[in-house]
Image (cartoon, rainbow, N blue to C red; front, side):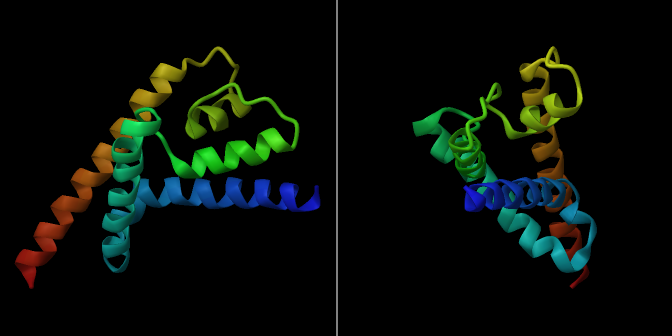
Amino acid sequence: MFLLHLANVFFYVFHTLVVAFILSGWAVPRWRKWHRILILITAFSWIGMGYFYGWGYCFLTDWHFEVIRQLGYEIRSYSYIHHLITGILPELWPERITDIITVAGLILAAVFSLFFYFKDKRRN
């Protein structure tokens, strides 16, 4: 049981850092290569694996939610971001709105990443 609690904390910290890095990693030149790789991994999970498991599938969310279920808690969201938001805001917060904002965040981060990739490439 201790290891499940430890895994739960790990996933909350790690997954939240991954989301933060996806949204902001393009801003630091040294991180841009890793940011592009993470964007591709995320897109592959959401679209490539999502083709088989459901659009927007995230393997980190799947692993984390399995840990939460094993701890005996009920998961009321399909989305990790929605799960986080409903932990702070009322449960009435619509999951669909969260999904739209989440996808927009990934697309915007990818656009910034590509913009700086070509800008950096031009400079060199």
